[in-house]
Length: 138
Image (tube, one colour):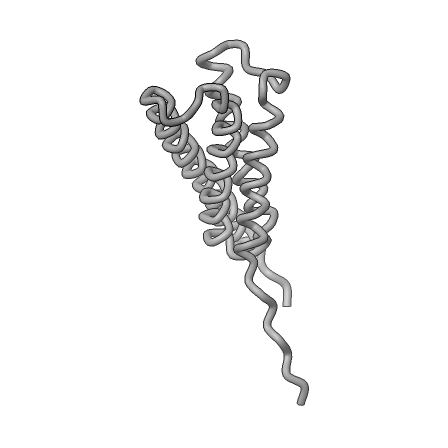
């Protein structure tokens, strides 16, 4: 039994909106974590020299939570959904950096952000995968 084109279009739209929503949520979580870290740096609770590591941790947490949202909304292909949400997070961060800072590039710490975002998305995809049902032999 073949799926109709209409069913495939609905499924594609559900996956696309799930991934985009996961990417936006991951950006919000990343910004919230970085805001908390900046408060910690201003108050002297966190040393300033660890700022780069906390940025990557914020991206990983954002990718993890946003990827989890994308995995739950998509339903199938959890690893790809999580990785796609992490990629959306990285692209949003890159776009904001280019628009506001005018000198954002991969050489200026972008590789760490990419690894953190994709790593968080991949972990959410692996954790969000549903186990396959066992078939009972008759």
